Image 1 (cartoon, one colour):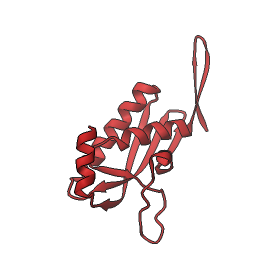
Image 2 (spheres, rainbow, N blue to C red):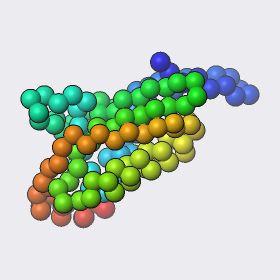
Image 3 (cartoon, rainbow, N blue to C red):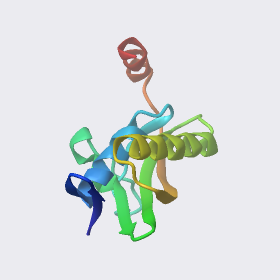
Length: 129
């Protein structure tokens, strides 16, 4: 299903996959997030998805009154999970509102796992940012 919007120039259709990619990209930029996880746990192990599969860790349900989003994430060991989840919710809400102009009803965050990030990976992130 896609979201249809009408304006004075015509009709705009936004696919679920586009909303999922925007949400996944916005979430992946949050501090404390290691990455997006697959929606299903296989043998109790959360699968970390690469940058090409950001929308696979996102479920999008577009209804007539707005959008419901569920994000499956893996957080970094040692961070406050509730703060990371809150930051992810706020960043996704802002990104979708500013880029697409969608009304967000609900954003759910499902933490699929916790990973220890190697010190060298943290140093690389600091230099890139």
